[in-house]
Image 1: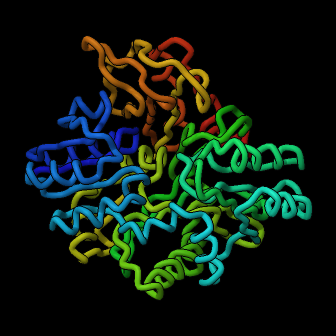
Image 2 (image 1 turned 60 degrees about the vertical axis):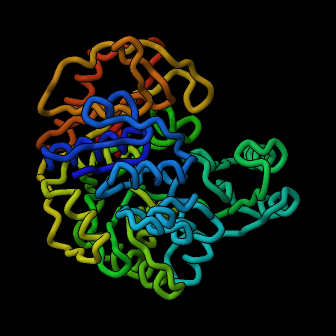
Length: 421
């Protein structure tokens, strides 16, 4: 069987790793992949934005099944292209991807379907945004309307901070040179939760809940990143809370998509805040989370590939998924300077040793003369497994002690629940 995984980060390495452990006879391919993925899959050097060439490769190579990792190919319509070529692919259509690709579309969708979320205003010019901010209660949340690799959100604690971010969007155009819009919304306080489901548009399978850390520094300080760490399970997410999330958020979302005649096959990622009013939606994503995937898949005892194939075939059953009792903690090691500018091609040492309780998923790596070097902002995901979060956390940090590259940076408070409480 030939399987293609599209993407180049830690999420895609985790997906490849899980499938390789399930189907020993499978031939894995990754576009474009990274050095870690290259240890278990054939790397195909096609740019992620060249969707037609990726589809042409899949057709020529007779790929049996394709899994899309990142949001950009989904928003670009790669699933639609594959479907036209009669190639089996797991992921939502371009239209369905608006849940993530357009913050405006998604917030209006939530309002239309009575899905709990913060109060919000939408505007597409600087003057209008400024007027909304002037009337807002601080802190206020400002979201760039399109895709921004997890960096398009600012929590402005004061007026000057809000105006500075709006200037970045509308005047400096740091995210896009065209079609800029923003969502300005109520700040929600509570505990964040990443809740993912696999769906074929009607039935759904919940994945193990996770909690990620978006800020670059300890104590949730500094700018937002794509994610600096994660853990699963999440103590706050009780069985009772999951029932509420499914009833008030998951099911209304799926029914809302049906009302708009949107066929949805893929992941729906619910970024939630557990507030005093109950769970509320911060954002939707239309793909596996990163770094959530890196803690969810090591805890999955059942076959990921079988579940994804069942979704594509319209045969999804809730009982297909089984979870291990172990906890997982992921600590991301990043290049110094991330999420701003950073150096690359820095040699990495300490990756040779193997442990059954720690898995390293590569994100921003490549090989030069058989040596692993850095090639991105987030470089490695060090994932510890243990009988509880405390043990898993200890194993991850202990493994990090043996890894080194110049100017590496990681948070030291991932899953430190005693301090955070």
